[in-house]
Image (cartoon, rainbow, N blue to C red):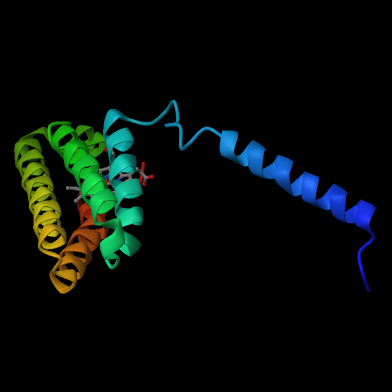
Length: 149
Ligand code: HEM
């Protein structure tokens, strides 16, 4: 059955205004309760989500390199910040906990630099391998350095 013209006009204008409203939504504003590190981690996450698809596409190399730079800068900031969980680690063990955290973040920076080199070289396989490694670091890093609170 054909939709009457008037109804189609209403539907199209509703869709158009919904699209405008969506475009105006604030983009991933950090929550007031976020720690400074969470703000940086969210930048890493947005960059990594973009890179998951973009590294396969040579047409997106310039934007991939831009997103890699965003993630690297966020890592430079967050590796100097103590994880919230550090406060719950017994004082005697805290220096080791913080050293391990910093070493792991340094490794994450290395993986992003490896990804950067692979994108510049146009080596898709190396790029995918570097992405896989840095992605698996997310789960391990959170298991070791967050206590879910
Ligand atoms: C690509 C890798 C990573 C991504 C995309 C990522 C993403 C995130 C995101 C989105 C958060 C915010 C909290 C949440 O919503 O769960 C977070 C928190 C956190 N992440 Fe990561 N993360 C990554 C790697 C790591 C690594 C390797 C470590 C440890 C060395 C780490 C340590 C933390 C800590 C400690 C917090 C809690 C913040 C705080 O304690 O103040 N993350 N991460």
